[in-house]
Amino acid sequence: MLSPPPAPVSPRPARTSDCSSLATLSIEVWIGSYIREGINGFFADYALTEFTADRFANLLTDPTELLLVSENRNGIDGYIRLRTGHNPPTGATSDTEIATLYVQPRHQGKGIGEHLLRAGLEQCQQLNWGHPWLAVNSENTGAIAFYMRQGFVSIGQTHFQIQHERYLNEVLQLSSSRG
Image (spheres, rainbow, N blue to C red):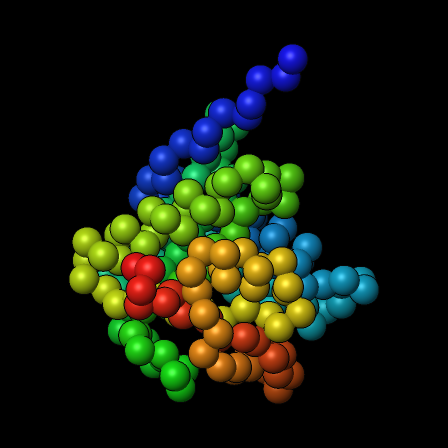
């Protein structure tokens, strides 16, 4: 008889020593989620510019940013990044955003995303940050369904922009009856 997988370890605050792992995990998840028909220079340049160890190191020193990581015995397998004090989209009732919730693809479906989300929401409450909102690519139906199961509701749409290209995103916010 197979034993159940071990429960995910409680997320912890990210450290400077995590920055290269966070950058690598971000590239893996972003490319895997959004690049479906071959990698071209446009998207490669974006990923290699956006997801760097230096950028993560800068986020760790910003008091409006919060990064929590999940790790297994071999390393980081997911993270959540929340931020506050930035312009929310129309319809959002808070300036707190879940900027990123990434779980390494081979570790998805193990409850890691739920653990990270729960820990992030607890931190928002402790910091007196509002009910967070997030934007998710409209074609990422798996992520949308995940957030809806966690108590998020649709509040509108926005666009994610890379240079002059725009991509439709759904805006979801944690229901005030859940937080």
